[in-house]
Amino acid sequence: MKKKQILVFGGCFNPPLNSHFLLAEQLINEYSQIEKIIFMPVNSQYQKSNLIANEHRYQMLKLVCDKNEKFEVSKLELEAGRPLYTIETLRRMREQYAKYEIAFIMGSDNLKELETWNSANELVEEFKIYVLERDKDEVEKIIQKSKFLKENKTAFIKAENNITSNLSSTFVRERLQKGKSIRYLTPDEVINYMLENKLYQ
Image 1 (cartoon, rainbow, N blue to C red):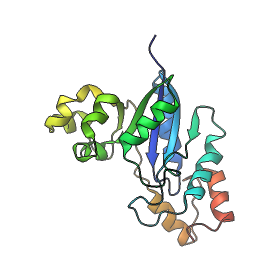
Image 2 (cartoon, rainbow, N blue to C red):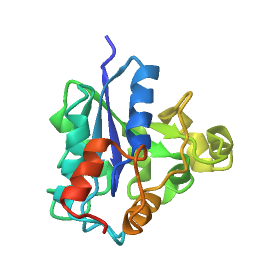
Image 3 (cartoon, rainbow, N blue to C red):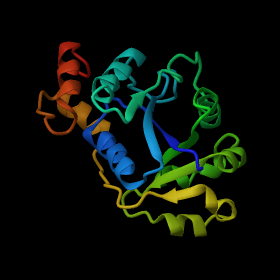
Image 4 (cartoon, rainbow, N blue to C red):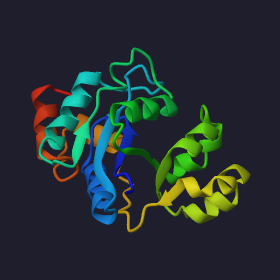
């Protein structure tokens, strides 16, 4: 019997948006083998500016994930003490969830750069990768342009019927800073949390 999958959805989630949860829900609807999606916020030591504290990003995700039995949020990278490479995160998740096959969600923008990632060969050999098409990208064309991706194309699953969104966390932060409404852009629980903790203002 084929193992059920747990998908790891990594990101800054600074803040988490409705589009993040919409994509996750869509994947669960589309693929019966997916048992659960685990949101994996990156450590604030990650090389990206304007990241708010780990605990705030974790709590915002948790408020939403607690209301969906198929969603979970992990502190694995937040508690690692240093930024982890994707291969390290996925291997640790595989140890933690030994009954499941661990897979990873990636945008087509990252697929183009995958060959440059740490331990890229091991990553595609050991794990399945669901690819979400961004903007006007086409997964098949991206794979055909790269010898590395072509040789490992069985590792990739093009996410079918995925809902694309160009909405960015940067846009939401800027609206908050200008005192504008962000209703319907991120869940109400997240909005209330940001306002209570005066985040991004």
